[in-house]
Image (cartoon, rainbow over all chains, first blue to last red; front, side):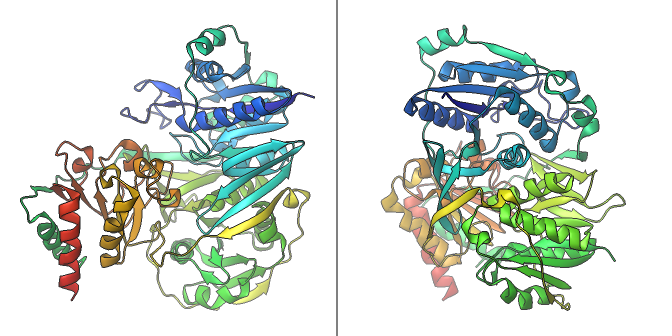
Length: 261
Length: 320
């Protein structure tokens, strides 16, 4: 039996760019170039490692987003994923996390899965809730925020490092896992991988393919509304001194003036 | 008056500070009703009552400790059914956000995470959030169902507000999904004796400039002189100099203390995302062009191996 692994990935505006909101207060995707969310690279990496360790496995990368989002799929394919699915529909513009999880869950079901491997959060919205939302919607165990993950037989195990404790987790497949940036460096696509990716299949699905209605998603279908977005006032320029031997004392004087000492 | 559910984050009955901050915010929206689960749940009641909880719903069962997240979702769902709250507030911890996400799906409600402020509005609570590495501030609201909102630590003051805090047993029947993910082992983290990073009033962080695990005691000594928590940049964590649990930044903790001291940290976007909302920012870096200096209230261009020990010594002397 083929182990079917699905990796949902997100195409995000480059965090090093000057990110803004568009007029409708959704993320402006025009001003800054997009790319595969860095935190999803860790998910692709772990999916590939699990696939390589299995007798027979197949890794499908999945994204929901506009046309450009294909770039994210292409990157994941060049890292070594086997195939890709792009869910694209004009009605999706402005979809919030709950709506996105609805679309992703439908797409994961349609693709068929034994294991869903997610990143810990996106680098734009940074909510970190998608894996839990997906597990809830798919009705399968969530094994999340793992810094180590392994699949053996029909069982997934992993280590979750929390604030107060480190936990070993175990669940039966099918399951949804998420991995952190501590799970292991993501590989760079090889030249061969980049060439091979061009020939790998990318399927395109719209909402109708997923039996979803446009009113369930998008800005109008969102469960939340953003009413205002304002640039944070620039911090007023601070005092900067060069250490001439008394820098530590000068800093202490400043902290005392601010009543921190 | 409408009731507002507050999920209690506690360790064996000791309530963690962010929960008390939630009670402050909940009182702006209605009457706080706390939900405390697991071992020591009833022991939370006295503290919660001192901070405004009118009722404390408690449940204890081995499932809360033995299985991941879902048993707590089942309990909160039961609490929602019993109380019909105007909103559900949950601390923005990793687990808190997962609980909130699943609860929102269960009760058919919108979800807002990582709020940094909350106020009552005509159409329900208005949440303030930071976006794009804190370059923007947004105001949002939930438009469907019972608002489920997670709130970051240090978003509100802890306020004493005596209330009844009547303890009531919450009846929870666990769903089939509750036992899906088993916790097969748990190793408690050793306490450092320092404040929790996300809750601390002062944070002292070290970065690439610290140049080795063997030099982090310099950062720790400065932190201890101020009663501060210790943080580290991703570069320092990736190099293995300090534990990931102390990482400040996009993939680590997001902190918002009264005072943030960055030593040997250049201030890449990944780091700024986790500390930019700090009230007062101080940096020590030998590179005058480091982007961290764009954020500071006070900066020292210099060698941290000279400046930090001198600062620690001066603070210790002044505190006498």
